Image 1 (cartoon, rainbow, N blue to C red):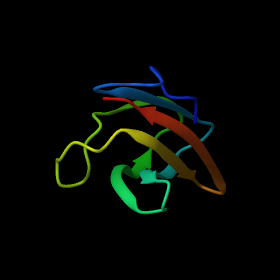
Image 2 (image 1 turned 90 degrees about the vertical axis):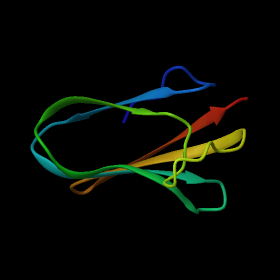
Image 3 (image 1 turned 135 degrees about the horizontal axis):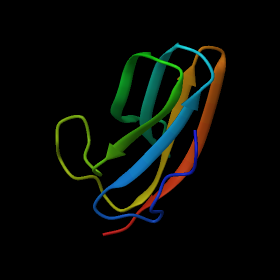
Length: 88
């Protein structure tokens, strides 16, 4: 999982990740309280580079508040977390 770009962002940001082999991928956005904001990827993905865009909205489609959010990627045995800043 690479650092999102742009960061800080408004209204959207890109998240890129690379898989060395085919893997089950889970990419979830959390707030600083550990609450799930949105699940961006929950699927089997092929090896290689992938990009996902987060539009600053929660699972229900509502815009989130300005603040710090965490993107957590699980791919096989690998877990990576990055911090992102959403500014309105």
